[in-house]
Image (tube, rainbow, N blue to C red; front, side, top):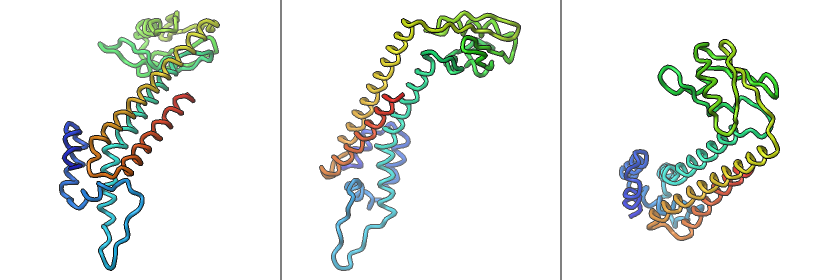
Length: 235
């Protein structure tokens, strides 16, 4: 029953399909899956054979792929996206990461700035961008000027682009703090969505699993999301 429901739930996932095929090839694992979350095993009476460890490990690995792996991947992506967003926000200190999101029109395509030039912070108020191909300097200057929220006025000097960095005003710092807070709240919202999706997957695949085991797995999911939310708050 659990195997069938899980297959219907994740039928479009090639990774999950491979897991299900492994279960189908090893019927004894199905029984183990139904109690895969339990921490204790009942002791057998007399000389009853003990359940094989490899089958249990296999089932645990499969459940980790079906539930833990998608949740962890989603939370990691959410945190990484927030870190990237915050790096592009200038609160005072100047760093090369301000230009990470900059894309340059080069060779008939949009290229990340880092692939066509080197960014160096010359001083707290000046950044120098050295183009690997001097002919790209005007395109690099335009891309820098178009960076949203920075209002920069770059100048072309030979094969370099010189970027004066004005110190942010009090109003600008306040706006950046507000934008950073909004980005963090959006990341927390995505984390909660990942929690909801994990709970839904667990609910649809919980046939034959004890209520205690389902609650234990649900609690583990909540702990992972709570830890991710704490990390988001600290960024």
